[in-house]
Amino acid sequence: MSTAMNFGTKSFQPRPPDKGSFPLDHFGECKSFKEKFMKCLRDKNFENALCRNESKEYLMCRMQRRLMAPEPLEKLGFRDLMDEKPEAKDK
Image (cartoon, rainbow, N blue to C red; front, side, top):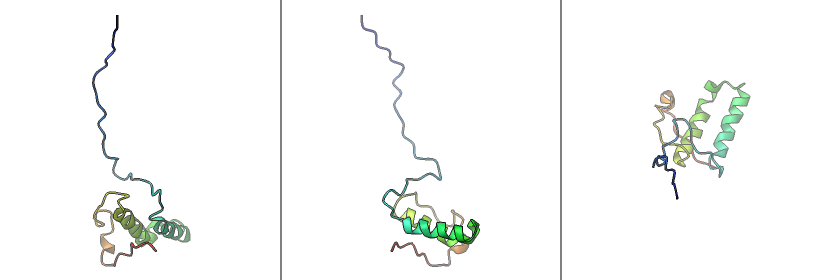
């Protein structure tokens, strides 16, 4: 006698990652922007408000290379920096 235990036919439902989580930059596509941002943080005693331009450039690089979902920079808190030209071009 064969008895199969079937606890339901629930299938896995994938969902997008939580807001704020994104893939790692395995290929170093934005490494130079990350390094520039981290150097700024170290030089400014980790006062992130003093490194907002570097942060904006890093996030723009990630969005351009689809390492994070595109978001308007205003929504990411850079409304006051929108007059400045973007520099998100890797070396």
